[in-house]
Image (cartoon, rainbow, N blue to C red; front, side, top):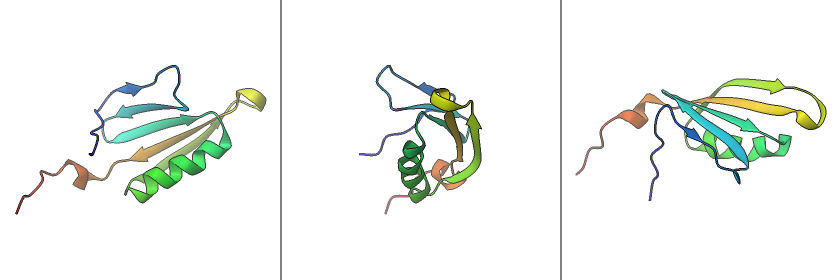
Length: 82
């Protein structure tokens, strides 16, 4: 079953490992640990998304990694059934 991500929504709950927010055709993900970026990178890159932004915030224990992914336009196309 494929889950559809809504545009302009925040997917953040108290137990989430990463913060996820959508904005039009982009997805912003904030990782709390550097190791989380590997899992995010694997999941999003292999599903056809393009990494268009990377930023590091703060230092030490408060450091965060922000990744911005672009969703390909072909994901918005209407499905064609045989």
